[in-house]
Image (tube, rainbow, N blue to C red):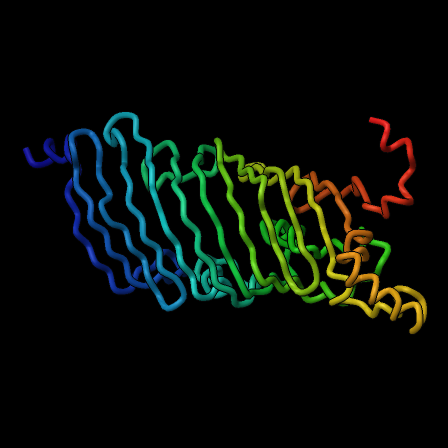
Length: 288
């Protein structure tokens, strides 16, 4: 009788684990409180905490016994992005940094049957004061693309020294949605001492492909000698004055837009537009 009852009911759980581990990954303290409500299993509280981050979530395992699907609302706060990624098995991607990610996710199946192909939902990201490192293929390569590690090939100015060890950021903000494993964002912004990046587009989490439109605005005055850029100390001084009066014309001249397609391991980058001084723009470009 007990076996038959468990086949129709899922037990209520009130669990606390001091050292929660999955394989070789150590996540810290786990607290779970859940109970059954008719055909659903209500996840009233799911907390995972360690010195680097705190995850709080709640949700529902809908219709668990027949045609299950899972939905979760979550809030992840990390005091060290780099250490948090190490805990998730992704070392050497980010150094330091703080971040908050909030959102809600849904996927078909049980909570433990999570797959990117069916993932849907939305989330908001805010991060600050970190460094995206010089990264490896896969998801790390995708991070490298949005952190401007391919920028030197796209500008006539040489920024090679600025990005050889990765990209230091002051702030990252983004809103994103996911539909059946395709992640989209129209307002990904990243700013740092060297440049500002704006990204729109999507990436397929299952096939690991992407289609991004990226606009890069390098901070010329913070990154290069104006004298070297303008051609001598006198011209450099004049350019410095013009830079302040005309509200960063050098940054605007150097800004570049390009498209990234292909796969995470083998991205294809095509420069789509290079902003120029409006006075030098051909008249035909205005006749549309």
